[in-house]
Image (cartoon, rainbow, N blue to C red; front, side):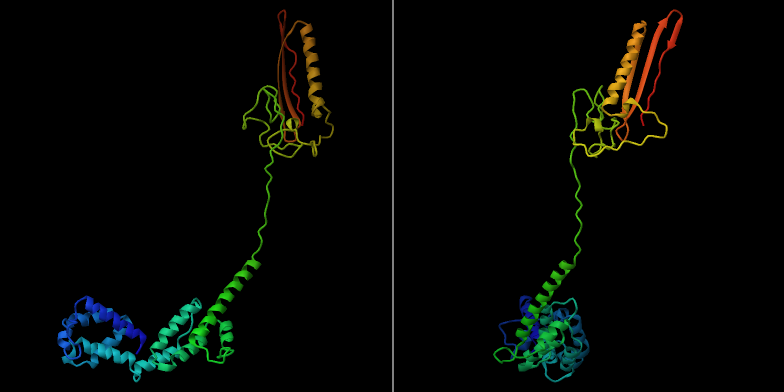
Length: 340
């Protein structure tokens, strides 16, 4: 008898007991009318419990075979179903065997374990009796999707002791081969995976000279600037190559200094030298101031140093000389010097 139908019959019997469709105090063989106390309800539950394929069998194969007088007898319906699914002679058995050998194949996404379960379920409908395990073993091997696994299993049907392999034996071998294939593929994929390049970024902070009351980014002697107001914002130091400060405040070891090339015919200026230029300009400015003071004139001056990208000073110096003689006001000096 088919294992599938036996399982269904057992589950349906339990359901009828739970639903009180049957009287267990009666004998179903000698007192069927009393045992099946709610026959119409049981037949209705039988139809509802069948899957679509089995329901088609009931409608077009089983029901036409039942006489009108037996339409309300659930035991007759169950007997016809039992004969249909378990009888060794009949079109249903041949159909199941035909599908078993011709249409069943392992799917490409189906595991070996799932394929084994499907083969065991299908062979139970073929009623091979004592030869069931042998036919299940053969179908399991023939229907494998992997050519490698099937080739290995076809090498021999005997075990090391000389006895034939069972369905469980070939299934275990196939699972081991499947696991080895997956491991080999995983190793191969990892070996062929390109190595990503690693880009290192330096986050070294520059060493800057910090004096009270001065800007440690640009070196302004009057007051420190905020980050966005400082002229050194976004500029590169020609001493260390880092950004946001000038070379005059850099304490790093000098690597190279690349002054901007001067144009043809341009005159040299005391401020071209980063260290001595400022001192030379200051001395000249102080000398002019002393000369003006000696003539009893008032002097007011302001200066501002602004550095360009190459840390060469842009010096904008406004020297306003206001002196008064009798009925005379004269602007003595307005000098703007640019160092490119």
